[in-house]
Image (cartoon, rainbow, N blue to C red):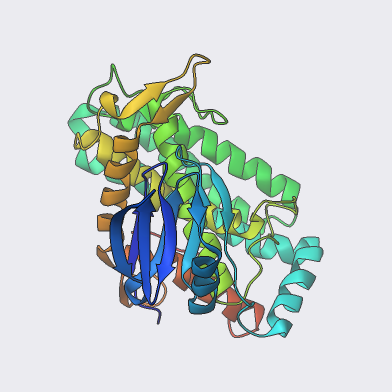
Length: 343
């Protein structure tokens, strides 16, 4: 089992990351902002324009340290990759499965089952915890709707029809997201998902968190020897980590959405942590990104019991474990891919 180590977030826009021996050094012109031993790091996220030195990129690739380049606003740019992990036969099996619509659907429908099941758990948890402050009957109705979709998802053999079921469930679930925002309703509201660019604070926060989780899913898949760019539900598109997007779907409600709601409802983030552009786009400020990243690191350390393995592990290892379970299915060790079903 891979240990959950630290992740270094570099948010100073004009900072440059270099390698000095076995240490990562963060510089701004001639000033050293920080020095960190590379062996304690699991990942380095650079929200900067200057980037990193070739020596550091090569070292990270050799040591399996996830080095990710993003714009200061959190838009994914690139990620370093070393030599492919695992057996070439595993990737050939993945490619054959991706080329077979029926086999792709067998895997994708389990992931969508996980997504809708986890979305239902989010609604049920909100109904139990905040019953006096929400419309309990409305939450129950949508929960029942999602439950009704689950057996249909498991029986589906068409990817297009599966996407239709996923879309219906997602629309019903997102229709209640605004009701789960319990604080600062004049500042934080959700009237539908929008992105590229996000047009309100909640969508800006969700996009940022989805980016962080998506990068961790891509890293986990590459670590176990899979090709993060070849998916089953999300089809091939140049530059898109389609398999990481597949994995992200089942983890979105329980890992990302609940995290964002917690930040808002616990008032760990405020309207001052966002800025609005002239075109109406809304983004987190530099200080806002730091707050989210610190809270994300803390959340990843929380220990849970994995529903399939029945073993205790930190939240941050869930993408890696799911990637391992997917490889076991592709190799024939499991009869089906077991999605992460949060309880």
